[in-house]
Length: 128
Image 1 (cartoon, rainbow, N blue to C red):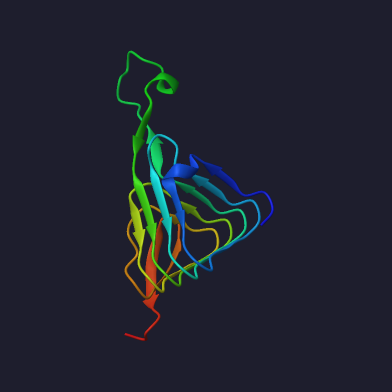
Image 2 (image 1 turned 90 degrees about the vertical axis):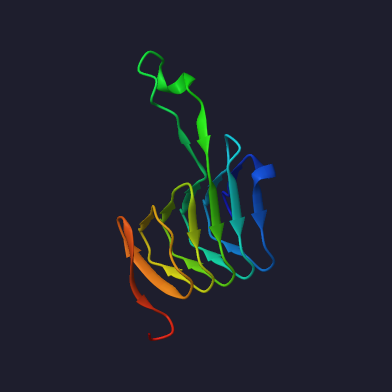
């Protein structure tokens, strides 16, 4: 692993046998949490943001409004391609594949192949 960045390590769980490509960012700042399941692969230059800036107070600069925490959960045996962005409050089910360059904003069911911006399920890995 070269260039791995973890913001708030206390909020990050990395399972057994996980491979992280170069320059991966795991951002659990603002009390967010990130769970990477066993034997999963995360491609180079992927970023996971388990938080979002609060921005609803129009009388206060966004930078002063803090974070809204969330959770990213990636199941066991997943493959997250390179240059993927995963946003807060997303679950990627076990055995799923996310194509390179995708932006994941919603849950991906187990054993799915998803791609795009925003990422959408394009088919199932089990042929159904």
